[in-house]
Figure 1 (cartoon, one colour):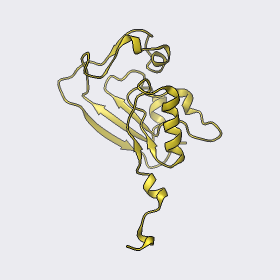
Figure 2 (cartoon, helix red, strand yellow):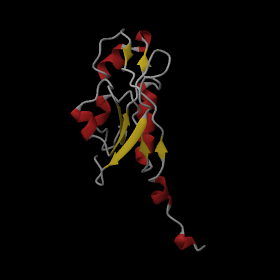
Figure 3 (cartoon, helix red, strand yellow):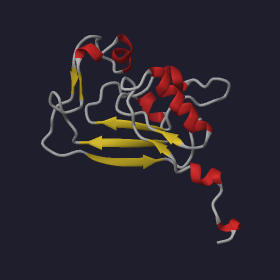
Figure 4 (spheres, rainbow, N blue to C red):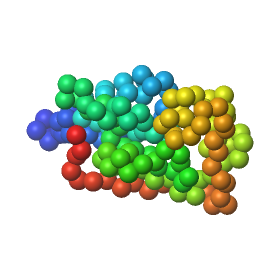
Length: 148
C-alpha cells in the first residue's frame, strides 16, 4: 500500500468517539475536559444520560467545551430544546426504564444541587424513570453541518 492511499490522521480522528459517561458519574471538570480534548482533536464525545452543564455551551476563547453527541433517553430529566439544538449528533435511547438497582435510577444522596439543576429536579430526591416492558434500543441522528 502506498502512503498516499492511507487516510490522514485528521480523517481517522473524526471517527473517534468517547463513550457516553454521565455528568455525575464523572465530575463536572472531567466531563468538560473530555469534551474539550475530543473537540480539539476533531473527534466526538457523548454527553451521557446525565446531560451537561449549559455553562459549557459558551465557548472560552473560541473553543467548544460541550459534547458533540447529546444522549436522550425516554423520560430523561432536563432535556430542553436548547440542549438538543447544540447537538451535532443525537443518540436516542428508546424504551429504557428502570427499577431500583437496575440503572436509570439516581439515588437521592447523589442528587446534588448541581445534578438537580441540570435535570430540573429538586436536590435530595431520588430520580427514577418508569420501567417499560420493552428492551432498550438506540438510534443515532447526525446533522451534516457542525454547530460551533
